[in-house]
Image (cartoon, rainbow, N blue to C red; front, side):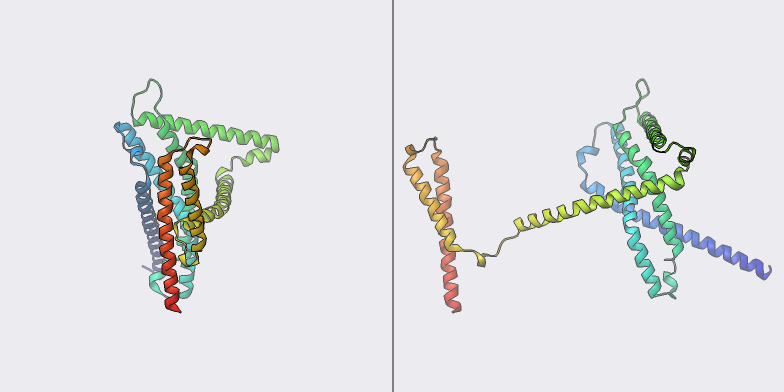
Length: 299
Protein backbone atom coordinates (compact mmCIF):
# COMPACT_ATOMS: atom_id res chain seq x y z
CA UNK A 1 0.00 0.00 0.00
CA UNK A 2 1.40 3.36 -1.01
CA UNK A 3 1.91 6.23 1.43
CA UNK A 4 -0.89 8.49 0.04
CA UNK A 5 -3.39 5.61 0.21
CA UNK A 6 -2.30 4.88 3.77
CA UNK A 7 -2.76 8.51 4.74
CA UNK A 8 -6.22 8.60 3.17
CA UNK A 9 -7.15 5.39 4.96
CA UNK A 10 -5.90 6.70 8.29
CA UNK A 11 -7.91 9.91 7.85
CA UNK A 12 -11.04 7.88 7.03
CA UNK A 13 -10.46 5.68 10.07
CA UNK A 14 -9.99 8.71 12.25
CA UNK A 15 -13.21 10.27 10.97
CA UNK A 16 -15.01 6.96 11.46
CA UNK A 17 -13.80 6.64 15.08
CA UNK A 18 -14.73 10.25 15.81
CA UNK A 19 -18.20 9.68 14.43
CA UNK A 20 -18.69 6.52 16.49
CA UNK A 21 -17.40 8.30 19.58
CA UNK A 22 -19.83 11.17 19.09
CA UNK A 23 -22.73 8.74 18.65
CA UNK A 24 -21.79 6.87 21.83
CA UNK A 25 -21.43 10.08 23.86
CA UNK A 26 -24.74 11.46 22.58
CA UNK A 27 -26.50 8.18 23.35
CA UNK A 28 -25.07 8.05 26.87
CA UNK A 29 -26.04 11.66 27.57
CA UNK A 30 -29.57 11.14 26.32
CA UNK A 31 -29.93 7.86 28.23
CA UNK A 32 -28.86 9.61 31.42
CA UNK A 33 -31.35 12.42 30.90
CA UNK A 34 -34.09 9.93 30.02
CA UNK A 35 -33.51 7.91 33.20
CA UNK A 36 -33.52 11.05 35.35
CA UNK A 37 -36.73 12.31 33.76
CA UNK A 38 -38.40 8.92 34.11
CA UNK A 39 -37.51 8.81 37.81
CA UNK A 40 -38.81 12.36 38.22
CA UNK A 41 -42.13 11.69 36.50
CA UNK A 42 -42.76 8.38 38.26
CA UNK A 43 -41.89 10.02 41.58
CA UNK A 44 -44.36 12.88 41.32
CA UNK A 45 -47.19 11.40 39.24
CA UNK A 46 -50.41 10.33 40.85
CA UNK A 47 -50.65 6.52 41.15
CA UNK A 48 -54.37 6.53 40.34
CA UNK A 49 -53.74 8.03 36.90
CA UNK A 50 -51.70 5.08 35.64
CA UNK A 51 -53.17 2.25 37.69
CA UNK A 52 -56.31 1.00 36.00
CA UNK A 53 -58.15 -2.28 35.85
CA UNK A 54 -58.29 -2.29 32.05
CA UNK A 55 -55.09 -3.56 30.45
CA UNK A 56 -55.69 -1.44 27.35
CA UNK A 57 -55.88 1.80 29.33
CA UNK A 58 -52.80 0.81 31.30
CA UNK A 59 -50.86 0.22 28.07
CA UNK A 60 -52.00 3.57 26.66
CA UNK A 61 -50.98 5.36 29.86
CA UNK A 62 -47.56 3.72 29.82
CA UNK A 63 -46.97 4.74 26.19
CA UNK A 64 -48.05 8.30 26.95
CA UNK A 65 -45.72 8.32 29.96
CA UNK A 66 -42.78 7.22 27.83
CA UNK A 67 -43.54 9.89 25.23
CA UNK A 68 -43.74 12.56 27.93
CA UNK A 69 -40.49 11.30 29.42
CA UNK A 70 -38.79 11.54 26.03
CA UNK A 71 -40.09 15.08 25.54
CA UNK A 72 -38.96 16.14 29.02
CA UNK A 73 -35.51 14.66 28.40
CA UNK A 74 -35.19 16.64 25.15
CA UNK A 75 -36.32 19.83 26.91
CA UNK A 76 -33.82 19.27 29.70
CA UNK A 77 -31.09 18.63 27.13
CA UNK A 78 -31.98 21.88 25.35
CA UNK A 79 -31.70 23.77 28.64
CA UNK A 80 -28.37 22.19 29.60
CA UNK A 81 -26.80 22.37 26.15
CA UNK A 82 -25.69 26.00 26.38
CA UNK A 83 -23.95 25.59 29.79
CA UNK A 84 -22.40 22.36 28.52
CA UNK A 85 -21.04 24.17 25.45
CA UNK A 86 -19.58 26.99 27.56
CA UNK A 87 -17.98 24.62 30.07
CA UNK A 88 -16.51 22.39 27.35
CA UNK A 89 -15.05 25.42 25.59
CA UNK A 90 -13.45 26.66 28.81
CA UNK A 91 -12.02 23.21 29.53
CA UNK A 92 -10.50 22.97 26.05
CA UNK A 93 -8.98 26.44 26.39
CA UNK A 94 -7.54 25.59 29.80
CA UNK A 95 -6.13 22.19 28.74
CA UNK A 96 -5.56 22.34 24.98
CA UNK A 97 -3.04 19.48 24.83
CA UNK A 98 -4.71 16.99 27.13
CA UNK A 99 -5.50 13.81 25.20
CA UNK A 100 -8.34 12.68 27.47
CA UNK A 101 -10.56 15.72 26.87
CA UNK A 102 -10.15 16.07 23.13
CA UNK A 103 -13.57 14.50 22.67
CA UNK A 104 -15.06 17.83 23.83
CA UNK A 105 -14.60 19.30 20.37
CA UNK A 106 -16.69 21.52 18.16
CA UNK A 107 -17.97 18.60 16.11
CA UNK A 108 -19.57 17.01 19.18
CA UNK A 109 -21.21 20.27 20.29
CA UNK A 110 -22.48 20.96 16.77
CA UNK A 111 -23.89 17.43 16.55
CA UNK A 112 -25.63 17.81 19.91
CA UNK A 113 -27.17 21.10 18.81
CA UNK A 114 -28.48 19.47 15.63
CA UNK A 115 -29.93 16.53 17.54
CA UNK A 116 -31.61 18.77 20.10
CA UNK A 117 -33.08 20.92 17.34
CA UNK A 118 -34.35 17.87 15.45
CA UNK A 119 -35.92 16.10 18.40
CA UNK A 120 -37.32 19.36 19.85
CA UNK A 121 -39.29 19.94 16.68
CA UNK A 122 -40.30 16.28 16.58
CA UNK A 123 -41.55 16.44 20.16
CA UNK A 124 -43.29 19.74 19.63
CA UNK A 125 -45.06 18.84 16.40
CA UNK A 126 -45.69 15.11 16.76
CA UNK A 127 -44.96 13.52 20.14
CA UNK A 128 -46.81 15.84 22.51
CA UNK A 129 -49.98 16.06 20.37
CA UNK A 130 -49.80 12.31 19.79
CA UNK A 131 -49.57 11.64 23.55
CA UNK A 132 -52.58 13.89 24.22
CA UNK A 133 -54.79 12.51 21.47
CA UNK A 134 -53.68 8.96 22.27
CA UNK A 135 -54.86 9.19 25.88
CA UNK A 136 -58.17 10.75 24.78
CA UNK A 137 -58.86 8.33 21.92
CA UNK A 138 -61.25 5.40 22.13
CA UNK A 139 -61.01 3.95 18.62
CA UNK A 140 -63.34 4.40 15.68
CA UNK A 141 -66.93 3.27 15.96
CA UNK A 142 -67.30 -0.27 14.68
CA UNK A 143 -63.58 -1.03 14.74
CA UNK A 144 -61.94 -3.65 16.92
CA UNK A 145 -61.09 -2.56 20.41
CA UNK A 146 -57.42 -2.37 21.25
CA UNK A 147 -54.36 -0.18 21.25
CA UNK A 148 -54.03 -0.39 17.47
CA UNK A 149 -57.48 1.14 16.96
CA UNK A 150 -56.50 4.03 19.20
CA UNK A 151 -53.32 4.50 17.22
CA UNK A 152 -55.31 4.73 13.99
CA UNK A 153 -57.64 7.31 15.47
CA UNK A 154 -54.73 9.34 16.85
CA UNK A 155 -52.91 9.36 13.51
CA UNK A 156 -56.08 10.50 11.73
CA UNK A 157 -56.58 13.26 14.29
CA UNK A 158 -52.99 14.43 13.84
CA UNK A 159 -53.37 14.47 10.06
CA UNK A 160 -56.57 16.50 10.30
CA UNK A 161 -54.95 18.89 12.75
CA UNK A 162 -51.95 19.31 10.45
CA UNK A 163 -54.19 20.02 7.47
CA UNK A 164 -56.16 22.52 9.54
CA UNK A 165 -53.05 24.37 10.68
CA UNK A 166 -51.51 24.41 7.20
CA UNK A 167 -54.79 25.63 5.72
CA UNK A 168 -55.00 28.44 8.26
CA UNK A 169 -51.40 29.43 7.51
CA UNK A 170 -52.07 29.35 3.78
CA UNK A 171 -55.16 31.55 4.17
CA UNK A 172 -53.31 33.97 6.45
CA UNK A 173 -50.44 34.17 3.96
CA UNK A 174 -52.85 34.83 1.12
CA UNK A 175 -54.59 37.58 3.09
CA UNK A 176 -51.43 39.31 4.30
CA UNK A 177 -49.21 38.96 1.23
CA UNK A 178 -50.94 37.57 -1.83
CA UNK A 179 -48.06 36.84 -4.20
CA UNK A 180 -46.39 33.80 -5.66
CA UNK A 181 -43.15 34.11 -3.63
CA UNK A 182 -44.96 33.98 -0.27
CA UNK A 183 -46.95 30.91 -1.32
CA UNK A 184 -43.83 29.15 -2.54
CA UNK A 185 -42.06 29.93 0.73
CA UNK A 186 -44.60 27.74 2.53
CA UNK A 187 -43.03 24.70 0.87
CA UNK A 188 -39.72 25.55 2.57
CA UNK A 189 -41.04 24.12 5.82
CA UNK A 190 -37.91 22.42 7.18
CA UNK A 191 -35.32 25.14 6.55
CA UNK A 192 -37.37 28.21 7.41
CA UNK A 193 -40.54 27.63 9.37
CA UNK A 194 -39.27 25.05 11.85
CA UNK A 195 -36.40 27.28 13.10
CA UNK A 196 -38.83 30.21 13.21
CA UNK A 197 -41.35 28.15 15.18
CA UNK A 198 -38.65 26.92 17.57
CA UNK A 199 -37.42 30.49 18.12
CA UNK A 200 -40.96 31.76 18.77
CA UNK A 201 -41.68 29.07 21.33
CA UNK A 202 -38.33 29.69 23.02
CA UNK A 203 -39.15 33.40 23.15
CA UNK A 204 -42.54 32.67 24.72
CA UNK A 205 -40.84 30.43 27.26
CA UNK A 206 -38.40 33.19 28.19
CA UNK A 207 -41.27 35.67 28.59
CA UNK A 208 -43.14 33.20 30.78
CA UNK A 209 -40.01 32.72 32.87
CA UNK A 210 -39.57 36.47 33.28
CA UNK A 211 -43.19 36.85 34.37
CA UNK A 212 -43.33 33.86 36.73
CA UNK A 213 -39.91 34.23 38.37
CA UNK A 214 -40.68 37.46 40.35
CA UNK A 215 -44.03 36.06 41.45
CA UNK A 216 -42.40 32.81 42.52
CA UNK A 217 -39.67 34.61 44.44
CA UNK A 218 -42.22 36.83 46.20
CA UNK A 219 -44.28 33.78 47.11
CA UNK A 220 -41.18 31.95 48.32
CA UNK A 221 -40.17 34.81 50.61
CA UNK A 222 -43.70 35.14 51.98
CA UNK A 223 -43.89 31.40 52.77
CA UNK A 224 -40.41 31.49 54.29
CA UNK A 225 -41.40 34.46 56.44
CA UNK A 226 -44.40 32.54 57.75
CA UNK A 227 -42.37 29.44 58.54
CA UNK A 228 -39.46 31.16 60.22
CA UNK A 229 -39.77 32.09 63.88
CA UNK A 230 -39.17 35.74 64.57
CA UNK A 231 -36.54 36.58 67.20
CA UNK A 232 -38.16 36.99 70.59
CA UNK A 233 -35.60 39.51 71.79
CA UNK A 234 -37.29 42.20 69.71
CA UNK A 235 -40.77 41.51 71.05
CA UNK A 236 -42.53 44.03 73.30
CA UNK A 237 -43.80 41.83 76.10
CA UNK A 238 -45.40 44.67 78.04
CA UNK A 239 -47.59 45.62 75.11
CA UNK A 240 -48.59 41.98 74.62
CA UNK A 241 -49.43 41.70 78.32
CA UNK A 242 -51.60 44.81 78.14
CA UNK A 243 -53.42 43.49 75.07
CA UNK A 244 -53.94 40.07 76.64
CA UNK A 245 -55.23 41.60 79.88
CA UNK A 246 -57.58 43.90 77.94
CA UNK A 247 -58.99 40.99 75.89
CA UNK A 248 -59.37 38.89 79.05
CA UNK A 249 -61.28 41.69 80.79
CA UNK A 250 -63.55 42.12 77.77
CA UNK A 251 -64.35 38.39 77.66
CA UNK A 252 -64.95 38.29 81.41
CA UNK A 253 -67.39 41.21 81.14
CA UNK A 254 -69.19 39.49 78.27
CA UNK A 255 -69.49 36.23 80.22
CA UNK A 256 -70.75 37.99 83.33
CA UNK A 257 -73.35 40.05 81.42
CA UNK A 258 -74.65 37.80 78.63
CA UNK A 259 -78.03 39.60 78.46
CA UNK A 260 -76.48 42.91 77.40
CA UNK A 261 -75.66 41.60 73.90
CA UNK A 262 -78.10 41.57 71.01
CA UNK A 263 -76.88 38.23 69.63
CA UNK A 264 -76.99 34.88 71.48
CA UNK A 265 -73.58 33.92 72.85
CA UNK A 266 -71.84 30.56 72.89
CA UNK A 267 -70.75 30.41 76.51
CA UNK A 268 -68.61 27.32 76.03
CA UNK A 269 -66.64 29.00 73.25
CA UNK A 270 -66.20 32.13 75.37
CA UNK A 271 -64.89 30.07 78.29
CA UNK A 272 -62.37 28.34 76.01
CA UNK A 273 -61.19 31.69 74.66
CA UNK A 274 -60.87 33.05 78.18
CA UNK A 275 -58.84 30.04 79.27
CA UNK A 276 -56.52 30.44 76.26
CA UNK A 277 -56.04 34.15 77.05
CA UNK A 278 -55.26 33.37 80.69
CA UNK A 279 -52.70 30.76 79.65
CA UNK A 280 -51.13 33.20 77.19
CA UNK A 281 -50.97 35.92 79.86
CA UNK A 282 -49.27 33.57 82.32
CA UNK A 283 -46.68 32.56 79.72
CA UNK A 284 -46.02 36.17 78.81
CA UNK A 285 -45.58 37.03 82.47
CA UNK A 286 -43.07 34.19 82.91
CA UNK A 287 -41.11 35.31 79.84
CA UNK A 288 -41.04 38.89 81.11
CA UNK A 289 -39.70 37.75 84.48
CA UNK A 290 -37.01 35.64 82.80
CA UNK A 291 -35.98 38.56 80.63
CA UNK A 292 -35.80 40.85 83.63
CA UNK A 293 -33.67 38.31 85.54
CA UNK A 294 -31.38 37.95 82.52
CA UNK A 295 -30.90 41.69 82.27
CA UNK A 296 -30.10 41.95 85.98
CA UNK A 297 -27.62 39.09 85.71
CA UNK A 298 -25.95 40.69 82.72
CA UNK A 299 -25.73 44.03 84.54
